Length: 268
Image 1: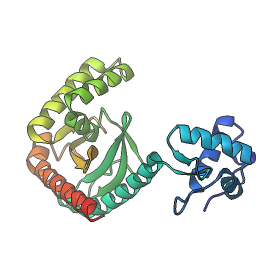
Image 2: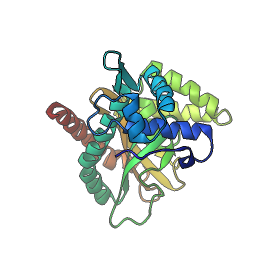
Image 3: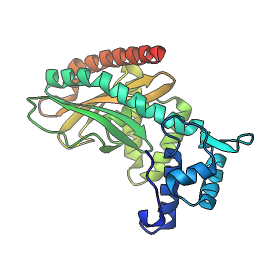
Image 4: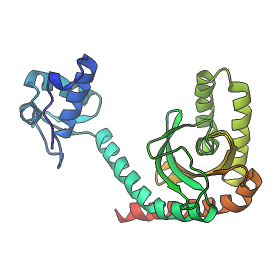
């Protein structure tokens, strides 16, 4: 249900107030995305009608609302619906992935992380720790990891096509100029590893004393949608052991999850 938003609901800044009111208007189309007029939206949200009219005009111009001149009403546009679809798919995917992740974490006394790229970060959606592991990775659901430093992020970079990777590397070069020469060499090596083996390893780049290996999960119509990685103590799991023992299991998990995602999409 929508919550009325007034000027006193915001923190006093015009930008936050406009954003809050825009979100309130979008929420007013729940639960059925039926057609709504400015007058109806004003009643539901408590926002004055002239303000509603200005906001709906901007939301329509941005594609977030669709306007029917015949009805003189609005409904949600494709970008908003796509966000909802993505949220549902992420929830469903986490449910598919979690038991496989926990089993792998327990088998290797490790932490298994599911994340997706967002700008220059990897956003963690699910983290499974071994029930008897001797160390705890300082990563939780909602944590953001530097894409260029984690095995998860480096796997994503390595899975990019040449055009996308060139654009992304240019952005990284601008964002990290002081470290770029050495970082570029490491990312180039990660890319070669991904293309040769389908996984990427990293040593001590996420946390000191921790080694990691990751694979990329391609969702239907969404290449490089997710990455799944394993983090272990470096003293007990050198990179060579990760490649020999953990990487094959991650590759099998990748195949299983991509198959399940495709079946889920076909059934929906």
